Length: 89
Image (cartoon, rainbow, N blue to C red):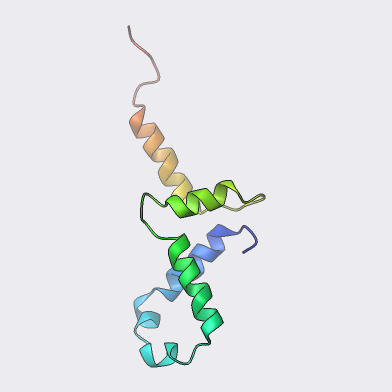
């Protein structure tokens, strides 16, 4: 992967879509190396521990194109957690 997490995530979602996922007989014909790559993507984009694997890989990849929706979610959560910009005594 060249650091383009946005495109890799789009491919991952497409391969996990219902029309593709139900092609069990076709999946049996895919070579082992491609299945290994798919499994690696599945692990990378796992939702476990709030996307911890993705976030760790993103921190160690320079340059990188992050997943825009994940980035937006993080910004939203920061904003929601800090509802007031004023610290009151």
